[in-house]
Image (cartoon, rainbow, N blue to C red; front, side, top):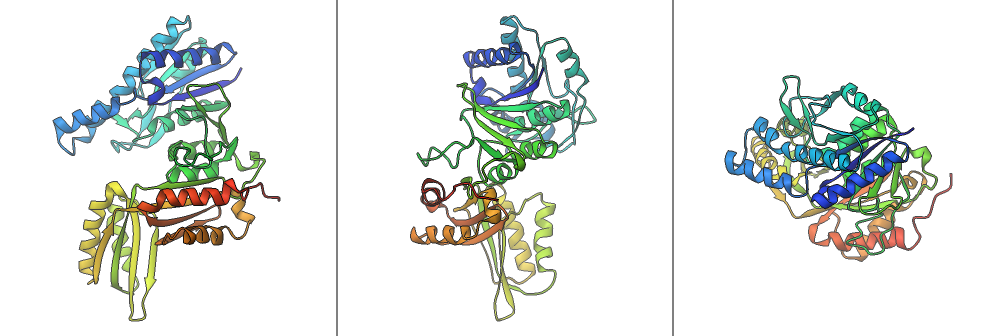
Amino acid sequence: MALIVQKFGGTSVGDIERIRNVARRVVETKTAGNRVVVCVSAMSGETNKLVELANQAGGDEPDPREYDTLVSTGEQKTIALLAMAIQQLGHGARSFTGAQMGMLTDTDHTRARILSIDTSSLEAVLAKDEVCVIAGFQGVDDQGNITTLGRGGSDTSAVAVACALGADVCEIYTDVDGVYTTDPRLVPGARKLPRISFEEMLELASLGAKVLQIRSVKFAMRYGLPLHVRSSFGSDVGTWVVPEEDVMERLVVSGVTYNVDEAKIRLKGVADQPGIAARLFTPLGEAGIVVDMILQNFASDGTTDMTFTVPKGDYRKALEIAKKVGSEMAAEQVEGDENIAKVSVVGLGMKDHAGVATKMFNVLAEEGINIQMITTSEIKISVVIAEKYAELAIRGLHAAFVEDGASEPTTE
């Protein structure tokens, strides 16, 4: 008897009929001889409504503790409704909030980290052959305060619970039927991948792919938990996210993705001296701003230019800090640009396949797209370009690396 954790997002539980559809899928899995834990998000649009109410009552920066208390109620509504729907189909089910299922987090409201999960309550219900219906996105700190895990936190909740319970698989049900080589809304020739490695999925998630939340992939990778990304509205096999050794075909490029939620900041004409980078990036780190790409250019006159990217939501705060530091360091100029896009190609086969970077740069050059920044790893190449060229770049790179057969399996 397998233990399966299933996660359904907001669109999958968007109304009562969709909740009934989820209940039927859960019961089908259970009657096939499995024990089932199902993790759900708030109904689509519910969290946005709650955030709007929070802003109306508490201003642009409402109290974090009260904010978490409010927005966590969306999932509480869904778990109760789904448990009732499962019961109506003749099967036992019990709902659990984050606190009730023993999900302990730190005290960092709105973006809490999971510290531990006491699975005893869940295991007691599973032992009675009943379904556990758990709230995603939320937990509780050691003082009993409700916390939330940030946007996309339901994926993290589901995978963390699956790891804690020693589940056989975690199925992530979404409004797409798997992981594609690129966004199929932009590129009709995008292909669904039957399998992808944790490493590749982690890169794709961090580089803009919206299918899985980054922290959930990290949990699954750490514990070797297979993930199965599938559609809520069909029964077809989706995409399996598995350890690298379980990927039979190492594609040169498995995915082409983009991210327009970043901004670029440049300090021009800074003295080229030891400690300059630390003086800039220390206050950014203390402000909780995550810096992604960093580029440093040296000039013959003893100065240097420092360019870096940050999440677009932190752009104003980061630019303010950069201007303050730049003034202290007598920088010639401090400027920012919100209209950028990060475009990336990802693939396990890049480890032992030469020429990927050359081909990528040639494709962009042929499209007349200027590259502003470059970063690489063993299995990815990312470039920053003007945002207006993002779709053109994605189509050109996908055609070159995937559609023309250039992403055939490599030999080892």
